[in-house]
Amino acid sequence: MIKILNVVGARPNFMKMAPLIEAMGRHPDQICHRLVHTGQHYDERMSRSFFEALGMPRPDVDLEVGSGSHAEQTGRVMMAFEKVCLAERPDWVVVVGDVNSTLACSITAKKLGIRVAHVEAGLRSGDMDMPEEINRLCTDVICDLLFTTDRVASENLAREGVADHKVFFVGNVMIDTLLKHRALAEGLELLEGIGVVPGGYGVVTLHRPSNVDRRDVLEGILAALAEIARQLPIVFPMHPRTRKMIDEFGLAGYLGQPEAGRGIITLEPQGYLEFMHLNMNARVVLTDSGGLQEETTVLGIPCITLRSNTERPITCLEGTNRVVGSGQEAILAAAAEVLEGRWPSGRVPERWDGRAAERIVEVLLSADQAN
Image (cartoon, rainbow, N blue to C red):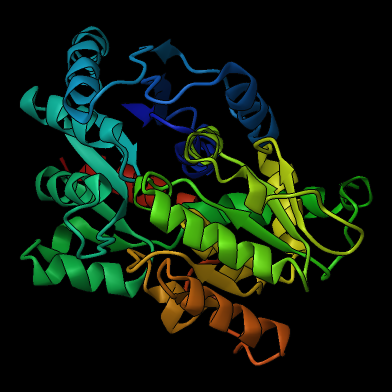
């Protein structure tokens, strides 16, 4: 029997961890697993809806570290997680993604002699101004097992000198979750209440500091969205940070009052199933999110990424994604390609088949038997 601590720190981690917990649950005689939520990002209403939608158990341990600077948050997670590791004495700690909790828990476990597995390893944007890039690099250096979503990620690790026996190309656990819940999301009836029809609107998500914390950048993006919305209504589930900055900068005028068949329709943040329903029925998605680039690739929806780089280049090489930056003209040019039917279709990358979590658990069991 091996004991595993599974760590989540923010809502994007939930979608990655849910299929792993389910896969581990199929081996009750071999795996004892507990879920630790660091509380790095926590909103009771939204977190509860995600746990319920994904069928995840409530966390066994909630560290409740809250927000703060990167150093404060990372330090608080390390101090709290050390106590959990000393009490639980796990054989493995499994971390996902690239949030501060991922790095903090990896360092803490390794210093206690506990083996660590990183799910979604090897992703690289090349942008060291992104805190997530630093978290990815440092986590991958110290982990014992590295599970990659695609061959580009595996090649990144090889180029960095990571030993082959540590790296396993398993596929994408986010896509495990999407495929499992796709039919349920399809069955929702949301569009009529919003005032849009399938294929007749765009979706936008915006939250990265590089896009929302500078007035000139945010204004350029909003101006582009307002222009697109003259032809295609835009549904905008707005992140609290983005709403705050729009108000502070006095840019709410770009949102205006949506009219029939056009304009920007702002919504509160959506639950997982509701958000998937919006995306799968959209004509186009405009985003600065990482995970959404992957989901739109599988859904076959054109994705315009409002960043200068991506840690998920496979979505551009094989999928429906294009990185255009945050400039108004580039955004409008990309949107025109979609509206004119000139956006190329993509394909689903290798092993994005809903079985990534199953492969990960097989490797964990084999690795434990080998020790």
